[in-house]
Image (cartoon, rainbow, N blue to C red; front, top):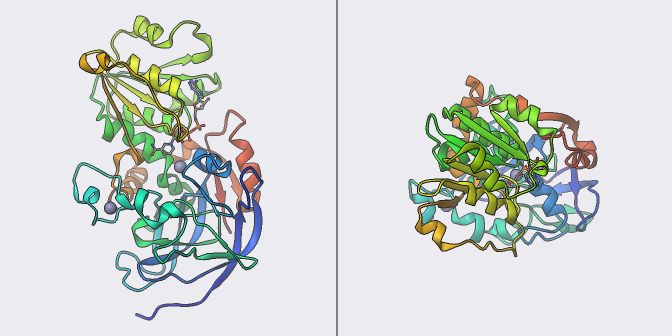
Amino acid sequence: MSFVQTVIKCRAAISWKANQAFSIEEIEVAPPQSGEVRVKIIATGICLTDASASRGKILDVKFPIILGHEAAGIVESVGEGVKSVKPGDHVITLFLPQCKKCEVCKREDANTCMEFFHGSQARGVMDDGKSRFKCKGKEIFQFMGTSTFTEYSVLKEINVAKINPKAPLEKVCLLGCGVPTGYGGSTKTAKVREGSTAAVWGLGTIGLACILGCKNAGASKIIGIDKNPMKEQIAKEFGCTDFINAGDVSKSIEEYLNKKYGMIDYTFECVGTIPTMKQAFKTAALGYGVCVLVGVSPQDEEINLSPIDFLLGRKLTGELFGSYKSVDDVPKLVEEYMEGTIPLEKFITHNLSFDEINEGFELLHNGICVRCVLNYK
Ligand SMILES: NC(=O)c1ccc[n+]([C@@H]2O[C@H](COP(=O)([O-])OP(=O)(O)OC[C@H]3O[C@@H](n4cnc5c(N)ncnc54)[C@H](O)[C@@H]3O)[C@@H](O)[C@H]2O)c1
Ligand SMILES: [Zn+2]
Ligand SMILES: [Zn+2]
């Protein structure tokens, strides 16, 4: 096979500085090097993590940068040694890689590939220390091994999952982050049992997907908690049986929930704040309850909990990307979507064109937007 070595000129949304609007610019995208693939992005979701990163709040992001991580596209070219995909294949971008070589990847029961924290993607570059993007002669950093707010991106082979070409890319892009994170939280991390009770804090994409997982696993009571009353209706469409407006509860929410519902088997924190994490933990049944932390709190914050709770059998865990092994499991989730088990359409409340990216980020604050998908031409 011969390897394409052309530079592609295309448009990308650049974040030049923290807290600035995205600026659509012409960029140069270098050809994929050994173990890398160049992907034409077709559609990308906007996730809260992109918003936090654009404010410079997480993952030590360096500017200027091309953000975005929840996308689907078509492989345009591949570098030397790439075996799992070829030009023309349909792929989903993976912020959580699966290298299949590190100590974590080699285990059956773990998914947090060491490349995520220790690989070049954590430094915003490729393995040779360089980014594959340039704009106005300046190197532009890459984001989470994906950088999807561009018409073409270069990713490592370990950051893409080859999927069924019949799947609509503008829908299955959601399987690059939010939906697997919440859905796997209940079905894979907690392994919710039939007939059980669950409570979910935060009814954004992650919390709603978590509710869907609880429902598909056969939970009999699924309590959704949000401070935004507009979330009640959509949560019920996903299988939430009881909605609690956090703003209406004046005393401790854990006491309120325990009094109203008794022992709760599973609790899920899908907001990303320390107070809601504590509430979720303290609501899980003493003796056997399991609390799963899914939300991401600011990097420098810590949580205080009493060891007595652990001694009494309350369990606390957390997860990244729904505990899924990304390269292996995302294609299977695409099939679940095709079979109707995971109705991705229900999460997509807004569709915009790539040019409207700034409007897309504004929608994150309007209270009714669950996912906004940006479509590239
Ligand atoms: N673990 C992972 O792998 C992973 C991956 C992606 C995102 N996340 C994190 O998951 C969290 C949720 O993401 P999302 O995209 O669903 O966010 P979102 O903003 O769409 O939803 C958050 C919801 O929480 C609600 N909320 C805020 N404060 C609350 C409170 N005090 N009590 C109850 N509800 C409250 C909001 O009204 C909103 O509906 C974020 O912290 C995000 O960073 C985790
Ligand atoms: Zn690995
Ligand atoms: Zn995300």
